[in-house]
Image 1 (cartoon, rainbow over the protein chains, first blue to last red):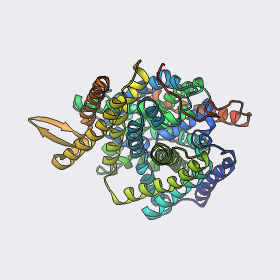
Image 2 (image 1 turned 45 degrees about the vertical axis):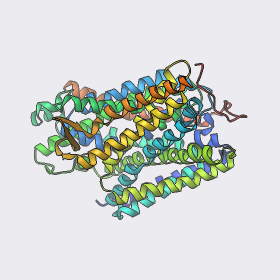
Image 3 (image 1 turned 120 degrees about the vertical axis):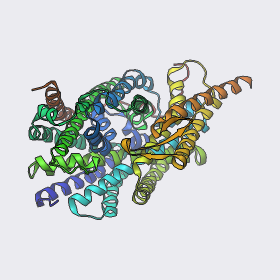
Image 4 (image 1 turned 60 degrees about the horizontal axis):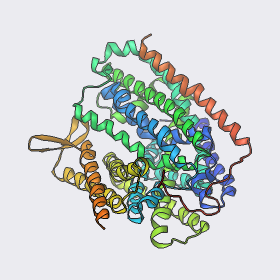
Length: 482
Length: 52
């Protein structure tokens, strides 16, 4: 793909603008709370921007469109709306519990409730989950498509720029750049969608081409698989990115309203990617696109088919913004986990703010380097992400749920056993499935048959959450006996 | 035009004009002076959730 020099100039100006924002806001950084939660001063509009743009990365853009090109509207209705429900719980129930608490990370909550062992387990799970490996590799692919760069070069340049502005301006730089990135990523889809819809003859045209199953809200996959997929939405309740933004909000109304507006925008974004993916499926059926086209490339091919020069440049800018807004936010989170949640309590409890900021800046470089190493040397990144998201939920859901929703005294040993138990159960589940399982091509997963029962990779939570729950109960009983 | 097309145009309205409205509100807040004090300022120690 050849870009017009004007398009290249716009991309360069955009990247330079991000770094300039980092430099300008670096003067605002005095304390670690300024660096990590923007001095707790964020209002509703900037919270909407940073919530939406950070949480939705390339997996939401290309991954969801790819899934819709295979399965249809089930992606929006059955896979997507449980997330809406979990987001509503976060907005209306969880967010209000943290007003004026002084927490900085999700591990702070665990430390205050259960103690250091649970705090470190939460930080390890959060760090693994937060590493933006997929986004960095997506950015590398974009550099290859846009500028003909080798994969490693695109990944390194994208990481260096993201690290540069976040290291200078911390969460302020992250949030301010997110505002620009949010606008670009939403507008690019809003501009592309009418042209795509017109190109395939609207939904009437798609109905003539696609199988009726594409229009079935509950889909045609096995029910247990669908339930397991929908269950991944509980990860929202322990999403470290959301907690950081809740702690960064000016007040609870600001964050509640931001979530409610965000839910509307996320739903619209999901529908846009679902529609574009289904348009891609119709084009594959009509022979316009290749039948063997990898599903995560469907959206890009549809866009290049219907968008004129200039608008396709805008769309690529939107893709770049989608990737970078995720990379900067999650790199900052991962670095905070390493320094504030693991290094500080274990080695330097008395570390001052200047030390924490300096070490977090160094940790940003380390986290980016870890992402690059993993991303460039392991091909099956999608499996790794599935593992990381499951690790987060299995480790944190039970302890956080009890901390936030169950009144009375909480068991420190219960918290430790629940978090480490959930973490270990996921590791064992994935190891067994990796060694003993076989690929399941239809659903792009792995499966293991035990005594006639088929176990898919997506069922990990069915095993890990009970282990975590039992861990809490056992710990609570032992604590009571003491 | 089907119900699916209507949903798509609603999504376009949210992602286009809707996102612009949010961005303008963000710019308005940006030029407004900040007036809130950080609750953790001074001690820096996180609170406990117990008793809630």
